[in-house]
Image (cartoon, rainbow, N blue to C red; front, side, top):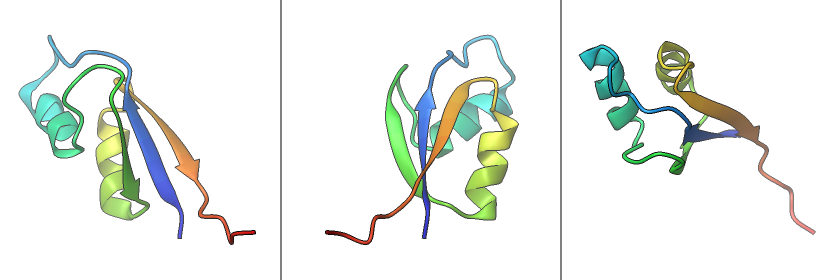
Length: 65
């Protein structure tokens, strides 16, 4: 299953409280901090809500060598 790597690239200061809360629920506490989450519709929805504050990339799980 794919994972999502999410990085906070813009400060949520000055944005609505619900966006600040969403960033916090994703586990992002400081600028340029990166977290990984399982790819599911709930996480995708949170990322979509704050897409102007974060950078997201899909990380495929390798089969190993």
